[in-house]
Every structure is written in structure tokens, then in C-alpha cells.
Image (cartoon, rainbow, N blue to C red; front, side, top):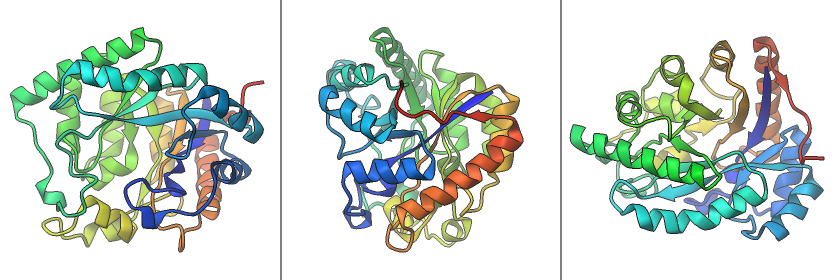
Length: 304
């Protein structure tokens, strides 16, 4: 089985908490990640939107674009508006041969609002979840018809956060909307990562290998502290530096025959957790568990 290892630039530049950002250029971010061993990088705010500008930068760094976040609002806004907003991203991602666009629901979400405690996260009724699942399926099918598949990202402080919410979303949506399984977000929400992989492996087309520090999470007061407070306190980290057993997690993906990207997405304060050093820690741990699970990790970055 083959796997590819990528990173998210959120370790270098945090879009929601600017104070948790390292003052490095895109080129330096890519250089550091590639030097640690990663062959892919998801899109961040310092990436150009013109493929004629982006491709030479990726080629020079020997890195491929392995995904990127789209802030979707289908829980409360019309389909046409989301199609209009995502179309330029589809065109860009096709031009640079990216594997998928990560759909993150920000409608009603409190993930970017530090004044909103975790306990106030939005919840959908049964009927709302059914309608939401249908809309996402239709949207995912449309994006695939345009030549770029989506990958749905369940997320803390959003309408699909917990394992029961994820199960309900998957039950009411169809194959037209594949799933991004994020180990860290699911563990933070109290879910069972291995069970979720077993239940939904047929729809998983992208993986975020985010680790968590359960000691930080367990000490949170969810009636007072927000998702961004948790990030600032160090709830997330890279594999090999946190509480999750990525040997078991990667093995479960292997058991189900998953092949594709495993992307380290670990936002934290870069001062006590320098991004290059954390990238090296994450890569070393992933290579260890990938080898044990029988994966061959691709080492080529930018396509020859």
C-alpha cells in the first residue's frame, strides 16, 4: 500500500490567531516542511491564487499541493453562493493537480470566535441534519463534476463535531461527499477514532493526523473557554508529541486499504513549538507507524 505525507501551513501561520504565527515566507515554510521529509503542503493564506505563480514555487520546493480549506456555508446559505465562491478554488486546484478541496462548515460555527465557549456550539435538529446532508451531497457531486472532489471536515465548534453528529451526517449524506477523518478533532470531541474509521472507511478520501494533548483538553472549562482558547493553550500537536496512538490509528487505515494523503495539521504556538522541529518529530513518528502498518511512503514531491 502507498501513502503520501503532507503538512498544513497552520503550524507556521495561524489564520485565526495571528499571534500564533511564525514570521516566515511561503518559500521558507515549504523549505522547512520538505527538509523534514514531507512531500505535500495544504494551501494557506500566503499561497498565491494564480497557478502560473504557484507552480514555480511548488516546483522549486519539490512539494505538491495536497489540499486546502474552503469555508462552506451550506448550513444556512444557498447553493449558488457557495458554488460561486468555490469555483475559483476548483480552477486553481485543477491547474496544480491537487487531490481535493477540504470543505469546512463555518455557517453557525463558533470555531473562529474566541468569545464563544465550547459549550455553546451550534446543534442541528434531526430534520436539519437530514436536509444538510442532502445539500452537501448535491454540492459534492457538483464539485466532482467540475473536476475536483471535496473532502468533508468534521470540526470542533461546528455543526458536525461529535461522533454521533458525524454518524448522523454520514447517514443522511451520500457518496457524493467524501469524508476527511481528523483524528485530533474527533478525539477532542470525545469520539472513538478507531470506531469512526471502521464505520466510515468507505467514504474517507483524506486524513488529518492531528494529535492532541489530553491533559490540556481535560482541564478546559467548556462553559467559559472557546475553541481558540484551547488552541492557544496547546490542545493540538503533531503525532509523537501527544496522547493519541497513531500506530493503532494508521494500522486501522491500513486494515481497510486506505491509500492516499496523511496530512499533519497541528496549530500551536510556534515559539515553544518551533514548526521545523515539530515537523521533524511528526515525520519521524509517522514513518515509524507507516512502516509497521505496511505502507510504502512516496518520497517524490513535485511531479517529474
